[in-house]
Image 1 (cartoon, rainbow over the protein chains, first blue to last red):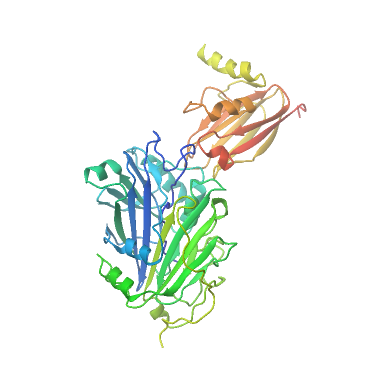
Image 2 (image 1 turned 90 degrees about the horizontal axis):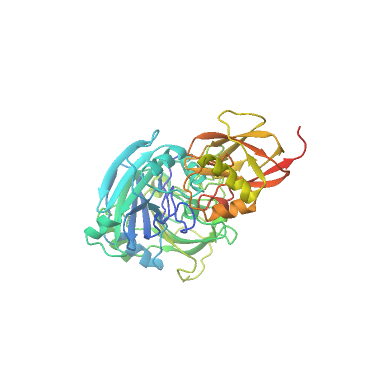
Length: 366
Length: 137
């Protein structure tokens, strides 16, 4: 089953790498301790079996290079520069700007990793992007050989994701090149990744990468679907997930998104949901599985609650209500956005707590 | 001479662990695997006064260390600056997806920790214990 990672935002690692304090091993901090901050905001849209993954990398100055390696649900057909306002517009629709997690990249080694298949290489502004396929160990080796420093939890996290989708996107952000391009602190570089897939999936566990067990993970996840989505795990106090917004997406939002570069696929109607992650890094052992079709329910495997071999979609506990309907219609559009807020207390909770798990889908076809 | 000093220095400081280097495994053999930045097993028992060969197998794609000793040893390494450990049998660097073996003779019974002192690894739980017994069996 293919899944859509949306995530990442930040940290992500995406798969692999992480944010760590200077005293810790691998994180975002360069060997000279001088860097650099990275921010990533990611947006994933799903329409007609194709995921549109938009993520932005921003920096806070410093020199050298750094980046992140988020997992992808499948092999992308294209990687290109993203639109100018999609991420900002979506975030503004519901909440404050999130920070993202990154990890540092030290000067790259020349050696190529064995056992990793390079799917695609491209450059977007100051970002050197490589899409690679391989197991956790192979991707980890490749990352180290290419200058990424991995925190101690990276091997397990890489394996965790590789077992579910062995596709990773390594984005190396050259801060020196960014400076030469005139990019200012806080400027982001949006990247639009198009990935054929059939079910959204948001990697959340990656957000804990490089953090101590007691450190907090704060993240915002935006989900835009044709109708009320089903998610797993449930948004409860014990899960660390909280449903903060669930409502039909405004026409102005959809129009604004659709008018951005490469975003013409955004549907005319959609349901907007926002979830926040607020939990200790040691407790964040799951991802967010999203049922985009409403047919089978979110997958416990995709949620990281079961190993891939034991289960797939269909055995999930449904967290939010969705009204069953025509599957083809349900596939008509999913938009995921995850924004990660780095640092506890970096954002202020707003809006009302919205109960979930009940109600009908106002966007369902008549 | 440098090697001798390197071997004697920790003995002089700690006075607990007697180490002897050997290119070939000798005496009892203990295999310690490093996976997901943890030691497996996290505790072993060995006899005092007998050379024990430790096979250190790093199955992670990142580097690790295996440093065994008393509190003073670990305190020293937490703030140490040695980027790589190869000269002292009780202090070994183990590269990603590789294995090394080292032979250590513990002169006194007691419990000693083995720790990876790469940044963040000890905090992540990369700690184990060697119980040194009087029983030669």
